[in-house]
Length: 126
Figure 1 (cartoon, rainbow, N blue to C red):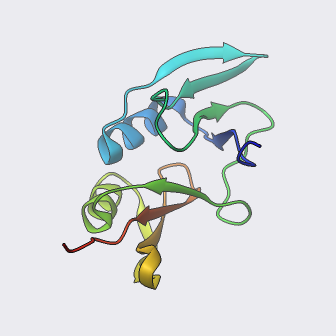
Figure 2 (figure 1 turned 45 degrees about the vertical axis):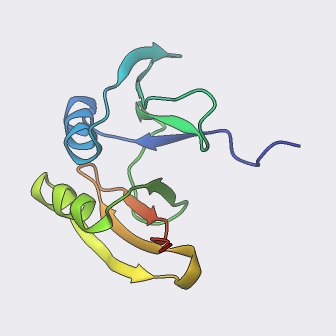
């Protein structure tokens, strides 16, 4: 069996601004393409690594929104990631919050008006 989600797209109004935002917040480099008349910028994917990848997407049917489906990005340091998001045109919507043995979560609004979530694993002590 496969995991239920295989790909995601984040709607954007300004693809260059969104590429800059996600590049500065997470350090990602993007591959651009046009698919079915829509401008796309693919997040990196690392074969064999856990998780999925997706794209920033600009087109008539792509409308940024803070309600609805929520995409969680993994991060090693939520505080640092939220700080970078806020410094680059985003804003914190839900502060870093413990979810017990599952780690930490937070949410921010990106440069395009989307609600994006963060998750970090708990630090295990030996």
